[in-house]
Image 1 (tube, rainbow, N blue to C red):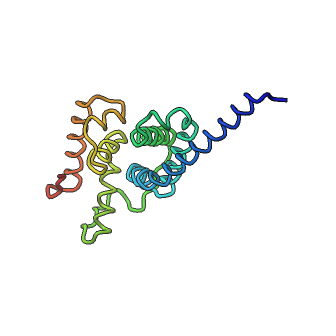
Image 2: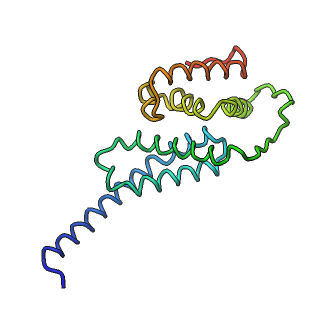
Image 3: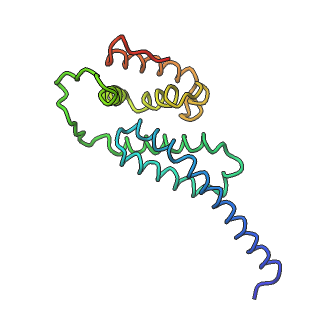
Length: 181
């Protein structure tokens, strides 16, 4: 039969776990839309984006007891998501890619918002995955060069160089009227 000290320790552990779980639930509610949107921009598939978001949250929950009070949870979640995207791309790198349109057909002119969205997503998809991550984090999520470098584990100069090249490729694909502010 456990002693009073052991019972107190067990009750305290359960109380701490309940608080951690409440904090995790609040984090999930706040971060899920951002994570899913970023995942979608990286993979262009809402179902895969949802899977990557769930994988990110599962990995974070596994580490939650260690990170919940000490880590920058927003930055940590972006890093875990990007690692999940990179892992998924590596696993699927040899698989066939199915396209709705034949690649040799010219892209239709972007006349509506939906056409613009499709055109931008296709242009983003033409970039290597690391360049996609830099463009999404830097220009869609509006993070600083230093923050993007920290998330992706590269130097700030690498982020600047890859960003410049990626935007150049996007301009080639989209035309000179394309502008990033």
